[in-house]
Length: 196
DNA sequence: TGGACGATTGACT
DNA sequence: GTCAATCGTCCAA
Image (cartoon, rainbow, N blue to C red; front, top):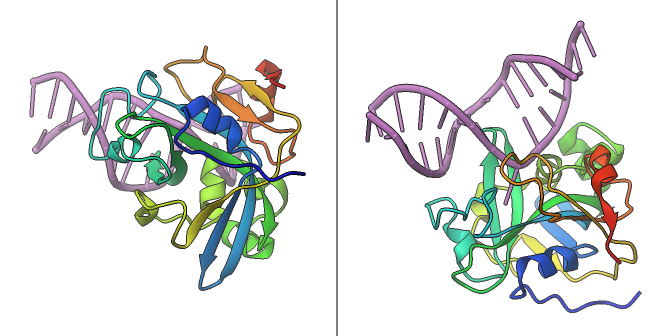
């Protein structure tokens, strides 16, 4: 499998597709964890479901900043969500990392999650917990620090579907996923279609 | 300054 | 299938 260049300044839909197969590396005192992205969702300024829809706020300002940075926020007062800011600076675009499959440090993830198997990382809140995503990662570079984004291998089968868990706009096919068993909300896949 | 709500998860019927 | 947990964010007042 050839490695791919990853250009995070590309528009959000391209980036959401390109992030499939890329890897996230988490270094912590407990050890090293590595996962491979299998599911993403695109969010943009022109998008009622996006935090950037009504312009920058204290929370969403990172989405309007330069690409290549993490956007981290808390959801339902419980779970942390991990996003990658993309597009041009000034555009409120980011890709939500919804699911990934463990590559390295699986036992450490099991320890943090109190679970094993696909429920380790098959959802955005689960992935953040498995990787011990901290709120202070918000606004930091994906190329340096203890949470890193790495180019991965090509993904042969890509599918797309409406996004999960939103109420505002269910018509856009802005969720992208692979055939991995670590993809979340498999029931939603019935609404999906093959992209390539 | 009050209060409705959320890019979710896990437990339970 | 239903539902509670739990709190930061945002906007109306």
